Length: 160
Image (spheres, rainbow, N blue to C red):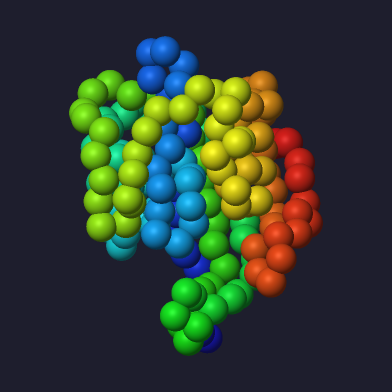
């Protein structure tokens, strides 16, 4: 039996004490909230703290899980050759607790954006949908299934 291959990733919607949201500008995806793949042997919370720090320079405390998302499309990476497998993403609400805004090899800019203006900055439909889930969070975990290629299609949207 061949074991399945999936990417597991985490995302952090980070608020500062003024209620602004942390956004980073990526090479391929425009403005997004920070996050990324969980490395082998790494737990979800450590992965999220590492990704936010690497991409933005900000230290966080993780408050709660707000959403679980399945991207069930297999598509080609930006190189047009490499297959990107299905992806499971877990988004968390976070608070900033220190650090200084910076950039990395993955990001070209980082900044704090007024919460009500975030959707003006994020153009990717999957990130927009996930941020809307954060804005509408009422204590129940959002679960969504979508595909991002060739076009974004939301296939399932439910609360758990």
